[in-house]
Image (cartoon, rainbow, N blue to C red; front, side, top):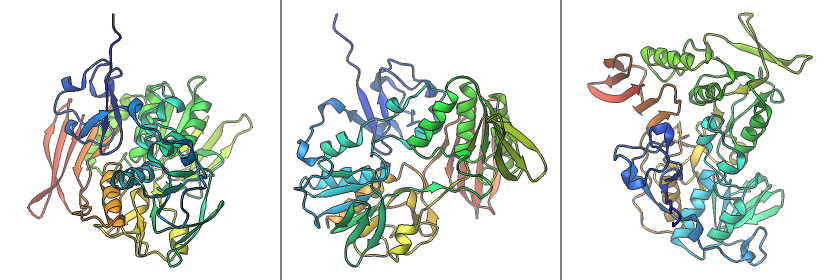
Length: 442
C-alpha cells in the first residue's frame, strides 16, 4: 500500500502552517482532515484570517542556495542593499518580501538570537499541547538564510545607528546600508516590583523553553502577574496541562480594560471552570525567594501567594534605545508613515511590534506581512498602493472559553447585549450611531 501523502498549507498573514495529518483539534478539525474538507468559515487559530488566505506550502521543495551565502559570507557586497535588525516574524517577513521582488538584492539580517523561525503567538498555548522547542521551530535561521540568499549575523547586537551616514554599529563591527529595516519587536514591561531573576517572561522561544524545562516534571504552582491577553492565555494553557495556576491583576476582572463588564465576568468564569484561581484588585509589591526554593508573592493588601514559578505578563514596551540614539521620532513606539512604514529618517523603515501608527502601537501578527510588502515596494521604488492599517480581529486563544473581538472599543461607547445564555455571550458597541465593535465569548 502506498503511504498517505499529507499536504501543508501556510497562512499568508501570520505564517501558521496547517498540516493535514495533524489537523486543528482546538478548532474542531480532526487529524487527517484534508484542507479542501475544512469548512469555509474556519479561520486561522492564530491571526483569525479566513481559509482563503492560506496557500499550499511545500517546505521540502524549497530551493536552497549555496553555502557561500551562510553567516558572514565575504562576497556579499558591504555598503549595498538592505540591513534588517531583528530575526523575529517581522524581520523574516521583510526579507521574504524583498527577496520576492528582487532576487539579487544584498540583504543582511542582524539578530541577538540564532534567528530560528517560529510563531511567537503559539508560545502561550504550547505547554498543554506537549510542544517542544524543536516542534515550535518551523525553520532554522541558517536554513532560512540559505533559502532566501541572505547573510545572517546571529548573536549580534545593534548598538548604534547613524541614518545620515547610513551605518549600523553592531557587536561585530559597523555595517553600511542603502536602506535599513528595524524589526526589533517589543520587550516585556517589567515593573520594579517583579525582579527579573525570579520572574519568567514568555516573549521569545528561549524564555518559553526555560520555563518548560522547570515545570515539565510534574504539576507546579504557578503565579501569573497580569490578566491581559497573554496572561489569560498562559493561565488557561498551564491549567489544561495540569498545573495549579493563580492569575493576579490590578483590575477586578481579567481583560477589564478591553472588555465590557459582562465579557470580563464571562471570561473569568470560564478560566475558573478550567481550574484557574483568578484574584483581582490586587497590587503586587514584590517577589522573594523562600529557603526551600519556592517564590513568595506579596501584595499591597497584605495577601501572599507561594509559587514554584512566577510569570510576568505585564505588557510590552518598545526598546527605544537604538531609535532614540539615532534621533528617530517616537510616539509610544517608533513612529512610522502610515503608508510606507518609513521612520522620520530617510531610507530607515520599521514594522511589527516596535512601531506606532498615528500614536497607536501595532502589536498584532496579522498586519506584519502587509507591512513588509509596503516596505519592500518602497525600498525598491516599485509602485504600490501602500499599507492601509485596519484594526485586526482580537482572538483570545483560551480553549476553555474562546473570545473574539472585532473592531476597537471606545471608552464612551455603549455596549448592548445581543445574546446571553450558557452557550454564548454576544455584544455590540455603538458610538455616535455607528457600530464600532462586536464581541463573542463562548
